[in-house]
Length: 153
Image (cartoon, rainbow, N blue to C red):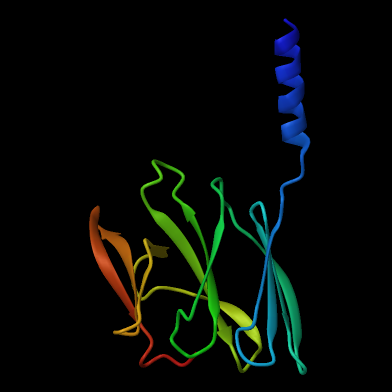
């Protein structure tokens, strides 16, 4: 009986513990500092340079743990980031939201794929300068190729 009370007390402590925040600081381009604070399902973004300062918070509707990945997703030479999670079902697919740095505005803007509703199982193909992801058409999985040669970012 005593061990049961101890177990219940420990569970209560775990539920009341604050979620630990994951902080990442990086430089998308020279002279620009960006800080990402991922706390639970909220992401705070702060971008600072000599001429610009921006901060905002994005709330992700996520049940699973969120992860941060850094890469040059639009192949413009600036570092970008993505937030990804395993799907809420069987944990088969990775869902990504990609944010690319816009040097003209000094902000990060969310990128959308050329097909489908989002980036699923995202892969970066540096040789072809494309993002490869999965989308479904009539319940059949297909490959989406998002290219940047004709886009203005």
